[in-house]
Image (tube, rainbow over all chains, first blue to last red; front, top):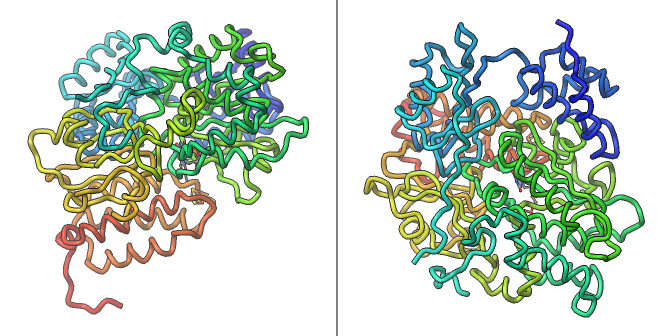
Length: 176
Length: 431
Ligand SMILES: Cc1cc2nc3c(=O)[nH]c(=O)nc-3n(C[C@H](O)[C@H](O)[C@H](O)COP(=O)(O)O)c2cc1C
Ligand code: SF4
């Protein structure tokens, strides 16, 4: 498949480049533009990024492979990143991960056959007070998970209904 | 205000004001007056150096983990030479147990923006970058909007408040890598590269972004600056613990009834934080252990907590550190072997691989911990683990190796019985 940026993408890329005194700093943000457009940054896409920025392919490949959020291969429509690190571990992150493995019939790291879900175990996502939690496709955080809440989420996603952004209650501000 | 009086403390970073994240509300509540003061009140602030001195006197100890006096760090910047100078704001927040800076992004972004602008003026910075971890997409969008709003109101850009000071402010973000929170790794990432920490010296104040003078500060550190300017250094330094003064965002997670982020004076007794602030232990369980400030700070047993307060001095006597004040609370049912294995997995996963003691060491720690967790360990493996931690510490480019070594050493020493109970005993001599 031929990958090409749209006109809007190219406009955004110009805006990104204007933030920095050099071209190289645009590597990470432009990889993001590419991933948002194509859903992944497979080698072909990495090549497009390199060509667009006039940077060596090896450089773009090096960057793409250093950072975990870039998808170096195609993923399911919804990527479920379940945190199991420290606070999430203590609060049942592994129970949620195992429950999802059972419900979706896949192991962590795998994608369902219909291409709908990819399941991952990830490191701390900075939501320790709202554990256990997961992140959907590098975007929304779903906090304070229970088995019931997880089941409801999967039902929604199966119907392509987007969950809401969850605002966290301000903690008690004045303790008296 | 003394630490003991914490119940009467009024938050300034995350105050009880509805919609404070909106710039109009922030301004209505006195926001951007500190910036205006330093830029226009020449009687009070003769020059940019007077701002540095005030912040230095306040002793805002860096909230990113290392606890370095912010004003002192600013004073290391070489004199302005007409070329570009940078402030890089560290919003990478990835140390397990830490989730405080996002509260500022979400609830009061302008207090951080104002603080960063004052810092930038104080150091005669020409451009500010805030680097936010890629996973915080929601907060990245909020920050982009808040910064645009501040541009529109003339708080950022050319000739702020009619002064001759101009500065730009950009949002940049990562893509998943804990190491990019280490300051020189963050600079590499900002420059569009793999996040390999740099060898120091040269320090960022000499050669930072694109080889130019650069200062790196944590988001919360900068958010404290406006109140220091408004209320004075002595106000700030009179709050909480003398050696580590000011308000702190405590992130409390784990087995407590009310986990969350709380803004309170430094130096609060750990047991008050657990029992009062966080509402006590969940399900009436007994307290077993606490990690006081993120996964790298050594764990304390419940019996070590009496009289220990959340400041660097007290925690040092107890044998640990304040770190990021991201406190993780564990109840009596917690399996310390399991818990430690997961931490070793984290550091192994996040080591950038530049230094052999870290790349190999973190791998060995995880491998041996997995063996012990699965019931195949031997008692001598515990001593092997302790030996590896000594081989790793202080021998690498950045402090990730130390951060990986400390929890292993201290969890094993402080819970040795529990670890030995999981290990096979052997009659063979240890050779
Ligand atoms: C492995 C590692 C990870 C770090 N992660 C962060 C981080 O996520 N956020 C942060 O502010 N500081 C982090 N730091 C500390 C920074 O290197 C630096 O000291 C800090 O940002 C300076 O700001 P401060 O003086 O205002 O605290 C990390 C350090 C190390 C060694
Ligand atoms: S100590 Fe570890 S993380 Fe830090 S530079 Fe060396 S290998 Fe990389």
